[in-house]
Image (cartoon, rainbow, N blue to C red):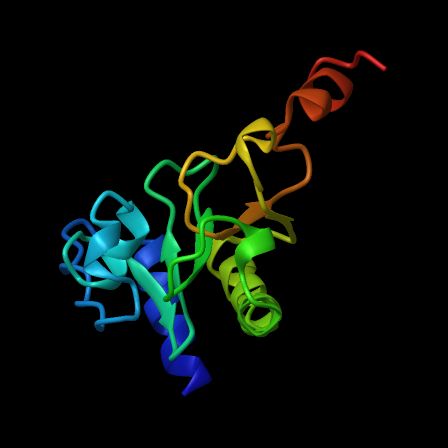
Length: 157
């Protein structure tokens, strides 16, 4: 089963010239009242997404505005507007997938590391108000963050 999941993940991260359409997503606990929530639309199968993983509690998809190839999101299937409103059991279920998904994403992208990121609230940069965790694959010297750009890429201490 794990080999099949890795193959599916790799096919999404390294698509052939004409990738197949994304698989349909299963219905969820996201209510129709959250019509404007893009993640609820994805979870209900009303908006397309490249699904990397799915279970009864959460879903992992490729970010449509990635910082780097393989940038993915773990999303709970029930709508919670922020991490602090998400029940601990849901947060635990999401976090328990990080080792498997992080390793699969690193393998598929040829990365050796990843950042795990949560933007919780407006001041922290949260744009979509449905709890989600970013998995951002990294390679040495990729200069993804501004501080790294100045320190590593142009040599400013």
